[in-house]
Image (cartoon, rainbow, N blue to C red; front, side, top):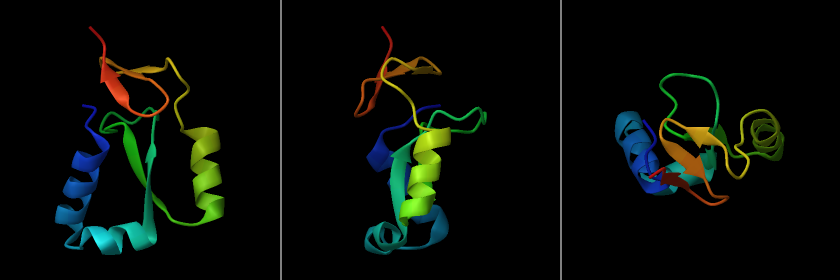
Length: 81
């Protein structure tokens, strides 16, 4: 199930017991189009250049990619009508 970026970050911080400020210091929220069933359309990636580039290369969606009834518009996932 795809969620909004803010929802993903809120759920992640709640599960982890950290603040949003702590999360953003150590993680970057990037769009994700991996094949995992539990993927919500976003990934919490370590906030360093190598990990971000790696994720962008292997898992980032391209404009028009579809995932569980949503389509990537280049900035966010939109529900397909």
